[in-house]
Image 1 (spheres, rainbow, N blue to C red):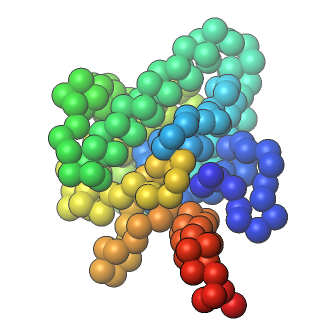
Image 2: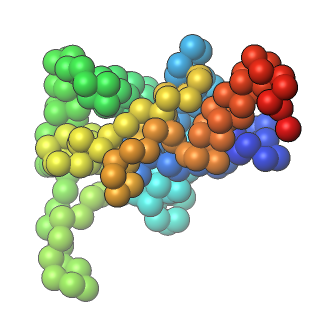
Length: 217
């Protein structure tokens, strides 16, 4: 289970305790489902407030914008729930697309279109503004649904860069987390060495010990 820390295993999984290992917001969004291989879940996005908290941890929202979005969700619970469903639909499309590409398969056209449609809508929400270093495109972080579009936009950009070849899916049992492999030789196999990597090595050692008990110790 990738969101668990091997030593001192955390029992309560949430967006506050999950590890951000994807290296890209779109991949970290896909990883808000703790396990995908063999079983699904738990799903860490259980409310719109969870989505806001996750986005704040991912560096997509500041404290002020996050507080305003929490207040909006309390005042508009049905709209907040609809936005959460939209975010989770995008999340599953992102997972299917990047999982397929990581395995060398071709992603489905409907999933690609879903990401592209969300990204195009997001483009219209950005504004050009003066910054300390010049000018930049600014996202309207106070817009309740802008976060979904921004995630789709960032994912679409990843799909069009050479970094796409560095997207991997963890080989750990029951894992399936996605990550951007930034290792020098591109040989990373696990979402984390101290998590799934260590568990795999321990499991292999135990299997060898059972097969060859005389070699133990």
